[in-house]
Image 1 (cartoon, rainbow, N blue to C red):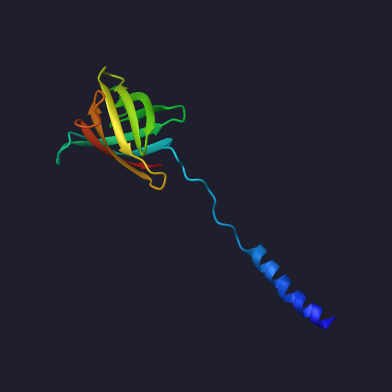
Image 2 (cartoon, rainbow, N blue to C red):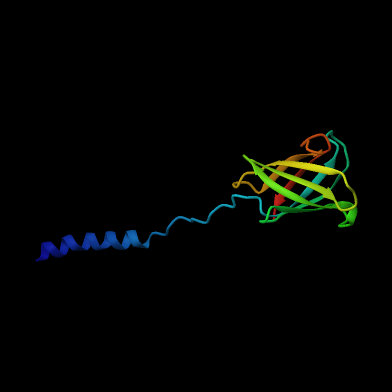
Amino acid sequence: MKKSLFALIPALAMVFLISSCSKEDTTPTNSTPTGTWVGTGQYGIGPGNPTYAFTLNFKANGTIDIVGNNNAAIDNATGTWTMVQDSVRAYYTYLSGSAFYTLSGKFSSASNVMVGTIGLGTSTTGTGTFSVTRQ
C-alpha cells in the first residue's frame, strides 16, 4: 500500500505542474494594414525636399483617407487600397484637385512601420516618399 502511495505522489505532482503552466500568447497578428498610420511624407524623391505630416487611415471596407499638413481640403485625399503580395497599394485623389496618385508601401504584420513611395497616375514612384507608424 505504501509503495502505491509513493508512486502516486510523483504522478500527482506532475499533473499539477503541467496544468499550472501558462499557455503561450495566441493573440493573432494584424494581417492587414487596417487602422491609422501616422508619420511624414516628402515631396520629391531626393534629399532635402520638404516634408509634411502624413496620416493614412486604412478602412476594412477597402477605402483609405489621407490627411496631410493642415487637415485642409488641399491636404486631404480619399481613395481605395489593396494588398499586392507584401505591399499595400492605395489609389487616391485629393479633395481639392483631380490628379490621381498611387501609393505603394511595404507591409509586414510583424512591423508597426511602413515605408513607401508615391507616384502620379498609376506609377508608384516619382512624386514622393513616406514613412508611417501604426497607431
